[in-house]
Image (tube, rainbow, N blue to C red):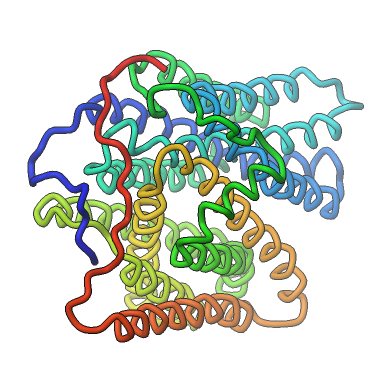
Length: 435
């Protein structure tokens, strides 16, 4: 880990942290709805279309739109109120679900594609806006803590969403599941509307700031070009997204092979253990940062990526129960640590440019996960889950190792005692006003 010039002294209060906790709660509620919807929507799509191919295409449409929205998101969140962007992203998803509920039987397939498209666009815009706004909401010194709170809320939401999806659909039906999902987005929008927070720096966007499309992408790449370390980190996250797709697709296959009578048992146990590890490491990171006043460096990010990928690979080796739980815990802890390190590092980019950088990041992550989902599904037809996951996550380990070697070589060339290049910190905490 490296020194964080913007870190506050331990125990220093944050101007926006008390409001940010409400935002975390609202985000966790909408995340729960998203995870519930991932299960319910796929099952409903299979029932309506009667085709596994159509169901896969609906999921692919969501991923493809999420990737394409990355071209637009950087300009949108840099030129407009991120608070409004987040509210619009969640509102659009709620309205799409209402439209699905109201759709007559003959047009439900079209409505399903509409929901997928809106979820891909709205979810990406909301995510880019939130990630780029964190330093402005709580101040640069507390971004690690804020990222930890968001990750903790999402971890709880993921486990609860996946665990309750089957119960909600079985006991109450698809309509109730979609109503509940729409309500979670509405709660998030209402919470955001109520919060007196600023999500971007004061004043208009700089002159000539690109709005969207290829111009915004070029802007983001232009910002990243002088900092190849950030470009490399984004590339590693894309490869990591490819690996994540492999274990997400491979887990149900592996679990069914372990116990065909109860295929959900292993998956449920894994994700519950993963979430515990994620939550625990977020608390540890927050305490460490508060005690030392230091941030998470690039080397720690790379080490976390290697540990996370190794944990996921080991889970698929068929270990005894105790070791399997330990490997899942390792994967969860390393996953949470790596995400916090990654976001906190990208959030050091100045506010005028941060949205473009997170737009590029969103594109890279969606590309990695989307292509990984398709390729993994094809590979699992002919290869074991262990071999597919080992190759995918092994590639991430290799990229992390190369990145670590490059960092070490840079330090050797700089010579002993040479400080690392200074990284501009985001603006200090701002007055809490509505944006």
